[in-house]
Image (cartoon, rainbow, N blue to C red; front, side, top):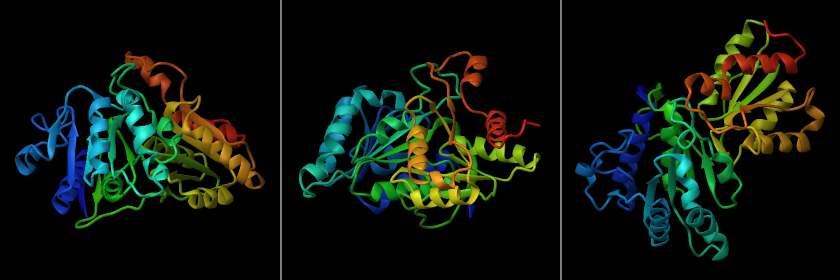
Length: 328
């Protein structure tokens, strides 16, 4: 095991897959000469050349459509959309072409495309650079969606996504790039559709993904001081969803809070809450609760931004209310 950052894990995954398969290439704004705006592809241009590390124009719709065409011809493009906020610009080639091609050709065509999308708030980047838009992608049949929270998971899931024959959207929270964690040496793959219990517990299940896994774990520490034993389930993969792991946790704890950074209205947490209510109602001792971002445009002000998104104290308070206890 080595301790590396989340950003280094992304870079390692890309390098290893490009060395393994000459059909894998990366493209996006500032990916080649600059090495990406987050420094994740520094040195790639020198190592792999301009045919496999492409700087694109500021035209997300154009280069995403180009990547779809390349994937249909047998290549494996890994496209970075500099901020997830820009993905609506390229929704037609992604949602209407890439996601539907396998189905509409009866399995004759596949689109092995990965769309990497740095997202999330916390950097004071204001309304157009701070959103969490994973629910947009989970709504489209044919797209797979991952949102890893640790260096080991981003490396293993990204490598698996690159090898997958269907389009995969990889959500990478910008504040996670500098976080550190242990990553296994050698080949490391994490299957799509496999959740991970990051902390076992008995009294309540906290379901989260991406950065909010860390908020949920911090909240569990707070709750432990109140004699509340919280289980933290990191979905890692939103589509496909590890329903078996989620159902097993609910059957054990009988109470569920879904935590996500995206705005509460129409967020992926609403889908999870509905599915749990429909299929696991008899196991619930309380309604499913959502702790999520407020339904507002992400503010630039640090004080306001901190009020908009979930935090460990707020999550712990919501758990206490669910269990009928006042927060300590």
